[in-house]
View 1 (cartoon, rainbow, N blue to C red):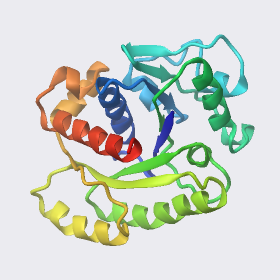
View 2 (cartoon, helix red, strand yellow; view 1 turned 60 degrees about the vertical axis):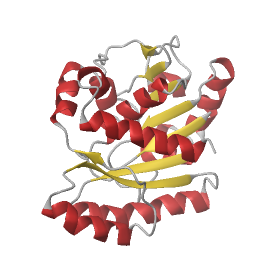
View 3 (cartoon, rainbow, N blue to C red; view 1 turned 90 degrees about the vertical axis):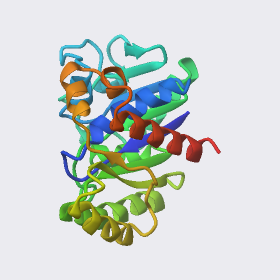
View 4 (cartoon, rainbow, N blue to C red; view 1 turned 180 degrees about the vertical axis):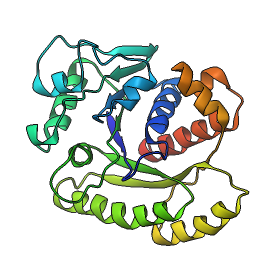
Length: 249
């Protein structure tokens, strides 16, 4: 079982969309995938049209309450629904990893993808820090803008801090540009700056902006279902293949 956290320090850069499409891509590669909605906003659950009244969620999972239940979307893709009531103060740093290990013994999984809240890691322990303390890998989508450059400077030291102090097994696979027009002046301006600030922590794949992603989101589907030959479909598959190569060497 490989656990991957997807995290950003600001919303709107496609973190949840990345989680959904990476999960579907890995499932298409023949891997058994669990998506964990670890964000109080429940955006991943909403993306899959899972109601907040769903009888089992990530809080039940951590609290060991309720009757275990996942939502199955593909033959080998499962979702652990999110909860608006989940709070970092209620849990130990390693609790998520322990529960996932327990689940894997009874329901073997190849890849777990954790959709983390879009909030800073600095300060008191938050859900994102619990996720990273429980993960093997972490990736972070960014956009081609000044705020993303600032985000690199803020996020990278926090990831390395967690690795040093709490989870020596954590590997930062890198940042990657998401929802970008590679021909735009903005991308050409901020791409080299981002790579410079990212100190080599960058994936090769770039996910280009594509209206079909929004169409898929509105229908509670993936871009592979609504536009399988689109730019975004091609790019998300490439991203999954790049990550798959890195984690299953």
